[in-house]
Image (cartoon, rainbow, N blue to C red; front, side, top):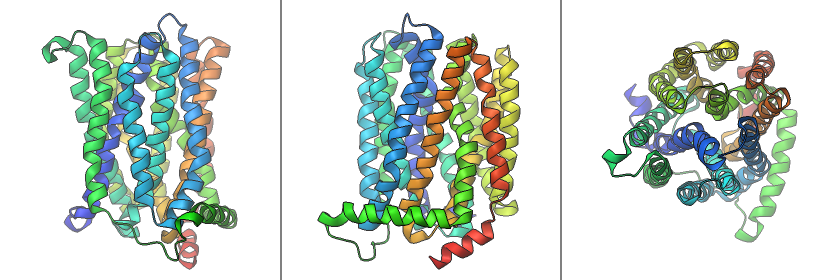
Length: 424
């Protein structure tokens, strides 16, 4: 395992997961949904605030989805993946830190910062993902991708545990109350993200673009390259099939990540229960992500993804009828077992189906698909919750996405995809 993981490039690349997962855990999954519902949307009906939160996630998803393919194409054409990664990282960091100043009841300002922060977080991931084959070989991509997710669970979990302790005992940390602790947590996430992203920018190098155009022509070149990539994807049957299946099943995964806390609040669980459940997910997710990397290497990435989807379907059915905090804790542990695995194996499987010299632009389409999924899932959940007045019905809609995605993924032939990719 030493030759797989313990080299400077892989560790530096993986540390970005360690850095930005603090945003995914503390902000997106943890404190923002709770603070948005109980502080920034104070006095608003729970179903309405659920709709507002779903809408904010959806707007961010649409913006990232629309921009990702073009940004990826420009980055590959100009050999500037790291520059774009830095730009979007700073966008996410600044907007996250700015959440500290949002006043109680000012949900529009909070939602605006959240949307821009998600755009920064998701936009950066397009270029981060595309750098994976700059630090490892395709045959080791499953393990390296999983190692990155594992470090993400570790980094996100460490800071989140500290932030939770701050909210539980604010006086111990010299804070006036739990509200101030949550607001300070947003600043801490921004600092954490900035500091631990540094190794990637110092130690990870990308190959120089072949025939890169001058600065004046880089956008035009990117537009031409994006059009060419779209034509390639349409003609690459395996890539197109994978993206269609991924769009469906990752919709369920992403919606559970972004809406789980809001769903728990809506069916009557207190915020303390939900925070503990998130910590359980992080604790379980660290070793489980590495285990899925091993599964991917030994049995194939598709096998690991299918296993994760099956577990998610069971989670949705159980979540529909759960009534106790203990059930929520068990579900959190189960989600921790498969969440990182499904995401990491999807990333590594896709990296082997695309030409390495065009990774950023192809990952632009990959993240576009993921963001369109993020747009659809929360919007469907929020709409069903409002229409029925019962948030429990909204969770069942995710089963259709998981089943349809798995069926399409079944027809993805990885060997055929790799053969075609090598010819491009």
